[in-house]
Length: 409
Ligand SMILES: Nc1ncnc2c1ncn2[C@@H]1O[C@H](COP(=O)(O)OP(=O)(O)OP(=O)(O)O)[C@@H](O)[C@H]1O
Ligand SMILES: [Mg+2]
Image 1 (tube, rainbow, N blue to C red):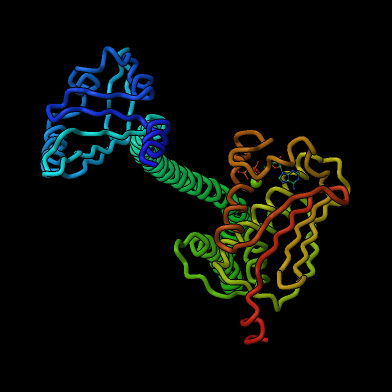
Image 2 (tube, helix red, strand yellow):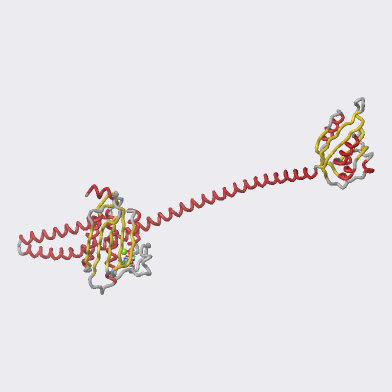
């Protein structure tokens, strides 16, 4: 029975025996196989022949302390074979006692766990690598995030700068176009004054004549005529000054008010060119904004129409149609002329600043740009151009101020 056990153990395990000093007295085939030594080389040698230099002394001290105090020692031990290779064995060392309870020898039973340990070590190594990778990954992500953040900040700054530059440019353009409109206004004033000034000169001459003839009645008459002429001229200036007052509050006003203002300023020069104006306007349509700004847009459109007629002098009957009406919840203003229209090659560009087909003395190319700016920024509306009925048609849409329409109707 005991022999069978012994055989079973020796077949399946690595078995060795040493005397009390650790000198090998027995090894089985398995021991020889795993250590690479022959039985002859092993017997009589100290068991530390298979000791691996990596294993710390303390482990052997523990081993000896355990077995010398007659207890069983169990551990996974790293050993070195004859050829220098490493093997791991799960080791159990049992002290064998005699009848008196004294240690006679030690028996060691081991089994090979090299593969498992190596796998475990490889796994641990991979885990360490992974952890390291993770750490570097975290650092790289952090670095990239920082880079992105910096880029973002830089971009934000650049955008802010660009926006500021753009705002300044817009302001400049706005000012320039104001100046241009001012120039246009001066031309209009000059034009509106030329006629009454000639008349005034004539009236003064008549006054002098009546005075010479002592015709007091005539003097009175002519004097009153002159006075009303001067009043008219002064009114013209008044109109223009009001027109250019800045920062006026936004209030609801009827579209026809702007139209009247525009006509008051522009119609005389249109009439001089024999341009007739047809108006069909719904007077109940209110929008919110500054009435003069919309008048300025209409004056620009009328001025452009007048210039277009001058460029096509062979035209028979010159007509500008102005329509103001409501569609859905928007007010529409249409200004249509029959002066030949806008060239299809340039129609896309007419709202660009400084785009003009006119001689430098006649146009700056800011009129429509300025008009678009006013319609979009001040009124939240749109302005578009197209060619129809032998001429150009400009369409303005404006959000209606509905409550005031109700209030005031
Ligand atoms: N009613 C129109 N008929 C034909 N062409 C037009 C008409 N209105 C505008 N245009 C074209 O659009 C261009 C741009 O018009 P815009 O009012 O912006 O500038 P401008 O009239 O040339 O100069 P400014 O108005 O600054 O004195 C004009 O030069 C002209 O070629
Ligand atoms: Mg113009």
